[in-house]
Length: 157
Ligand SMILES: C[S@@+](CC[C@H](N)C(=O)[O-])C[C@H]1O[C@@H](n2cnc3c(N)ncnc32)[C@H](O)[C@@H]1O
Image (cartoon, rainbow, N blue to C red; front, side, top):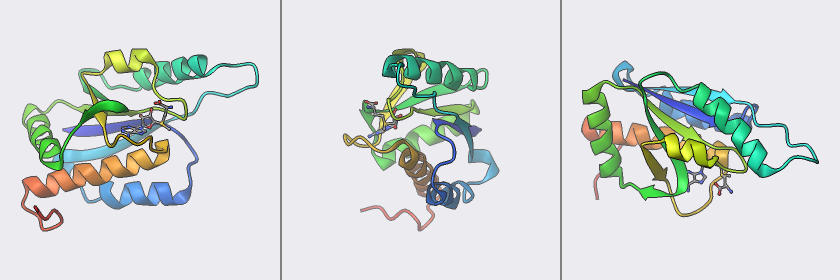
């Protein structure tokens, strides 16, 4: 099973890439994390956020591998505890179906991206910067994997 993080945003600060890699590289092959970066829409003076979102959404969906389960990251989605993420991760690994986590750009995800997703995952009720979201996702997937494997990285409270 591979988890694809398909995210709007290229040429982000180096610390974002380092933070993401820090956790992604710890995951084994049976639960590997792959990042696909989508260029943000050109935000000209005459354009509108709705158009930019739609353009990004079209290219995000075009990058989704066939037969994968799509989950959209959105602050208005469902909040999952670490135990819930681990439970879902176990199901995904058992099913063997690839999973896609979509991250929008500065103007968020277009309705079509939200509709195409089987679930909306809220990492917090705060609006997070899109670059930071991929780092948090990588850490949470690694934490969930650690929990499933009783690795001391995750200490249950
Ligand atoms: C800067 S945010 C976009 C904010 C936009 N105004 C909105 O309402 O969606 C960029 C992307 O990061 C992700 N994101 C930001 N905060 C999040 C959160 N708390 N939980 C899950 N995803 C989040 C979403 O994919 C969002 O489309």
